[in-house]
Image (cartoon, rainbow over all chains, first blue to last red; front, side):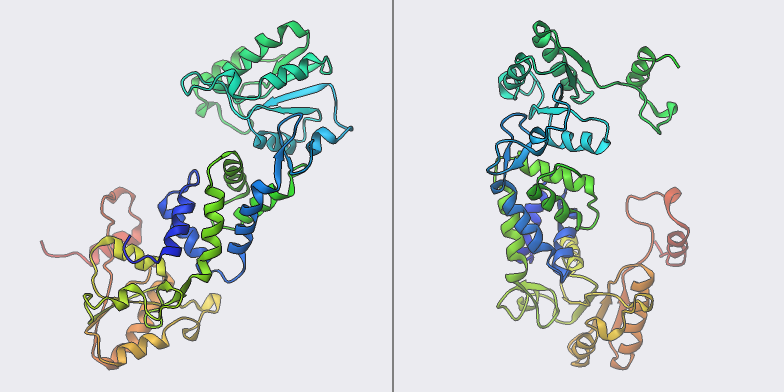
Length: 201
Length: 201
């Protein structure tokens, strides 16, 4: 690492702190920015600076919203189905579901999944406000859209148990073969789920 | 893309301008920074801001150096072999060669390679100062370490022709099988080069 000027090394180090970016990629990005004469570095710097100061969490669903706003754009939108609630792990999951174009209700962002191994308990994620929201009786269906993983399943199960008293319909996103995939490459678990969840046609 | 707050979308857009980072990775990085409570975003922002204001090009070899310095750390170091000159395309190539620990001479950074297709001609890269440096007679050997690509080879050939009058030893980095690679996976060109460049053992 000899002979790299400090401002260059600092940026390489900063990029390396991001997930999935190793030292080689970090160097490549840094030298790309050094070579580049447009103001990408400036734009990125400003956007990073504004990221946290200009955003806040929606007080209802805990999705990301603009700083100074109590509610996010989705919670404020009275055109959305007010009786459907989709529970997701992260704000990014909201974006992915929005981009799918298949969901028009409201969201609840947990900001984490239950994981006894990592010491993440119900009080560490936004579960209590979820139960409060459902307790109002406003929702007819709660769609649990946590990841199809151990933690996602455990969290879904916990939510279902806790919501039992409220007589609300509780569903979970379907498991099966991904569209465009091939049977040959499906893992055993996915195949078993696709079989047990098979549907009339 | 509906319902993403502007500060979040701005950072996704800025990340997407970097090479090798698509919209999905850009979103992932952005939400990682949003979730992360340490000051990675702040560090990255500051490092980006300082990148260009605090760096300059070495007046001798055109490597990156600290702003306000005429020479880079390598050119300033009189412990380095003053008679060997290694010609590379980018400042990152300097770092890679330094990390190899196998070169102790000086460098010359071209900041590009000849490419008639892309309209990059000899006057567009730092070739003239290279010829001036060699014309001083200070160097006994010029190692051409441009990439083993069409443009790298064309640039190397051009440099060799232009340096012919100076009676300096001109070499090019060896071509052959990469260490740890397997014959089975070597492309035809690499194999041909490895054959024609075979050495006594």
